[in-house]
Amino acid sequence: MTSRPPRPRERGIPEATVARLPVYLRALQALQGRGTATVSSEGLAGAAGVNSAKLRKDLSHLGSYGTRGVGYEVEYLIYQISRELGLTQDWSVAIVGIGNLGRALANYGGFGTRGFRIAALLDADPDVVGLTVASLDVRHIDSLEEVVRSKGVSIGVIATPAGSAQGVASRFVEAGVTSILNFAPVVLNVPDGVDVRKVDLSIELQILAFHAQRRADGDGQAERMGLEVT
Amino acid sequence: MTSRPPRPRERGIPEATVARLPVYLRALQALQGRGTATVSSEGLAGAAGVNSAKLRKDLSHLGSYGTRGVGYEVEYLIYQISRELGLTQDWSVAIVGIGNLGRALANYGGFGTRGFRIAALLDADPDVVGLTVASLDVRHIDSLEEVVRSKGVSIGVIATPAGSAQGVASRFVEAGVTSILNFAPVVLNVPDGVDVRKVDLSIELQILAFHAQRRADGDGQAERMGLEVT
DNA sequence: ACGTGCTTGTGAAAGCATGCACAAAGTGGG
DNA sequence: CCCACTTTGTGCATGCTTTCACAAGCACGT
Image (tube, rainbow over all chains, first blue to last red; front, side):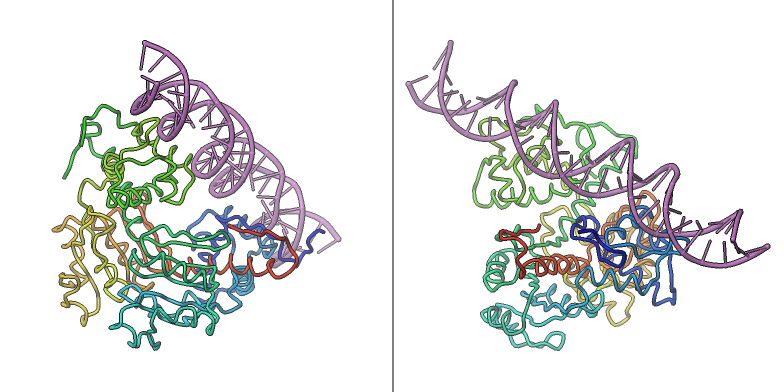
C-alpha cells in the first residue's frame, strides 16, 4: 500500500525529528503572529535555530507540505504539525507536588498553545491541600486514582521531592496513566508501554559546567598542570 | 581518596556520554548514601536506567577506574566523575526572572550536589526587587553587569517571560557569561563560544502527546498483539 | 601456585542523525 | 509558450551512538 499525495505518511518519524517539531511549531506561531503567510525552509530554520536541510528533511517525514519555489504556508504547516503532535485533541494533565515548582507549572498559562488542560493539582501535605492555586483546589494525593478516572487524566506531572516520586509514578501507572513528565531528580522505574520524560535542572547545570571547564582549560594557557582550582 | 596511579585520559568525551555522567553521579551518590562501597556496571546501569555496556563505554572515556572481577569503587568513581564534570570547583549562578519559576529554582536547595552557588537573583519588576527569596535579596536587572563582575558569575539562568529572554541573554553575554540555561520558550541567539541549554516544559509535553497519540492510534485496532513503542 | 569465576574494557557491527549538493517542481516575467 | 529563478525534497556520504560479544584481567579458594 503506497501513500497518496495528501496522505500523512506512514508511521516512523525519527525521535530526533519529533523533538524538534515543537520548536518549529513555536517558530511558526511567532511568524503567524507577525502576519507572515508563507516562509521558506531557510527562514523557518533560522527562526528555529537549525540547519535548513535538517528542517526540510524533518518536515518531509510528515508529508510534502511545501511548494517548490515558494516555501511553506504558515497556517497550513501549523495545522499539520499540530495534528502530528496530537495537539488537535485535548490532553488532561494532573500535577502532583504543589511546592514552588508545582505552583510555577500550574501558573504557567498557555501551555505552549492549547492542547493541554490542567485538570487537577495534588499534594500530600495537609497544609497545602485545600489551597487554591491557579484557580484550582489542591486535592489530597489519596484521591489520585479517583481524579485520574473522573477527569480523564492522560498525562501525569511529578513535581514532588525525590523520595516520593517513584511512589507517585507507580500510582499513576496503576491508574492507567501512560505518559509521565518527571521533574524529580530520580530515575523512575515503570513498566514497558509507559512513556517517561524527565526534566532535570541540576543535570543541565552540570553539563554546562563540563563545557565551561573544558573551555577554561584549553582556552587560557595552563592546559596541563595537575589540578587547579579558582 | 587513594593514590593516583591512573591517567586522566585525553579530552574528547562524546556529548551523549557527558549528558549521562550526571545521571551516573546521582545514582552513585544514592548508593553511597545506602552504604554501598562497590558496584558493578550491571548494578549501576540498573540504577541509572541504561544498558550496562553503554555505561562501561561511557566510563571508559574517563579512564580505567574499575576493577575486573569486582566492579567500581563508589567513592572513587564519584570523585572522578565530579572532577570530570567540573564540580570540584564552585560555579556562581545568577537567576534572572523571579516569578514562580525563578523562586522555585532559587529554593531548589542542594543543586544536585554542591558545586553550584546561587550568587544573585535579578528581576525587572519594581514590586519584586527588594524581596528576599531563599535568603537572597532580589536586585534590579540593571545591576546585572555589576553583579556578574563582583560575584564572578559564570552561569546565567533565564527564567523570564519569553519576550525578555533574548535581551537578558545578550546582556549576560556582553558581561562575559558564556554558559546560559534558558527556561523561556524562545530560541536564543548568541555568538559562537557561548553555550546555551534550554529546558522547556511545553516541548516535553508535546513530545509526550505525540507518543501517547501514536500509542492510542494503533492500540485499539487489531494492529499487533504485543505492541510497544519507545 | 594455579585454576575458577566474575566483571571490565573494547573491537566490530549495526543503527541513527546530520548536512551537502542537486534534480525536480513550481512561479512569474517576457 | 518558454525561460530564468527560486525553493523543496532527497540520495548519498560522513560521523556519531548504541549494542553485542569476548578477550583480558583481577580476586579468591584450594
